[in-house]
Length: 216
Image (tube, rainbow, N blue to C red; front, top):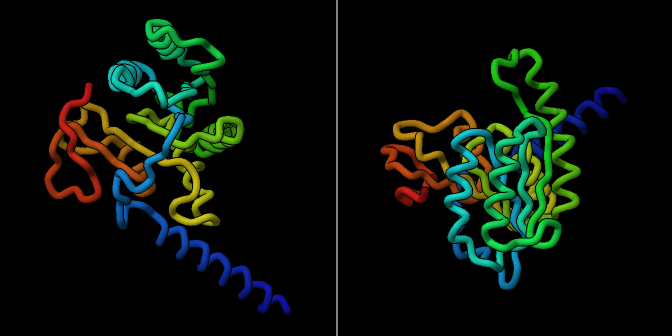
């Protein structure tokens, strides 16, 4: 009896792994226009400290009005990004709570944090991200590199295991302009499960990315 139960669980685990692998967008990036949405598009924007936020807000300057409401996700200790996001939206005449809002989540890994304790902080960030994603129900999530984005992007991908490749929000990753010859650590992981992976510098030999030139 025990052997039968173990076989069932093992078989289910293998099927789950195979299905997840088959659904990873890195195998076949979808056509950028394949999932265009009419009307307003709720978008989650993951901000990171320092240059990440500055770059992201520069990209958002050309964002059409239909991408609303906008939910900014920032690390709970990143007051700088919060202030920049507020200033950016005020300059657009947006209303807090109507056109946009700001959510905070714990950092997945703090600077100089031990790799031994990183799994615990990553789990903490993931649990907080679940609550945010359930409330927001975004149609799209965009990030440009902070580690805070990883639990958000990974969790947003999970519903596809049940609903299929077109289920859940569209995931877009823009590699930082500072990354010239190689991807960031966040980028190397996000590459597997985002729908579009954009780079601002040409990277020879790297498949599954779109070179778009400088966008900041």
